Length: 92
Image (cartoon, rainbow, N blue to C red):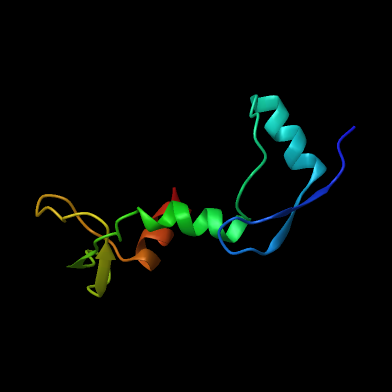
């Protein structure tokens, strides 16, 4: 029913393929328009408005090493580095 289409990106001018599977997905969702941008330009456009994530440095409660976490650590709860956190999760 659907066939791959070659479209031109309005952002970078490169050609990209609008696959039959993508066309079917668009039809299932009720989207009327074909994509205007290639995947790389769509991703760049989405990520342009995102704020970079702020990380905080804390001391790992298990090994004493440095832990970088995406939240402000509180003194009443332990903070673990990624290695120790993975060990704890694996033990559960």
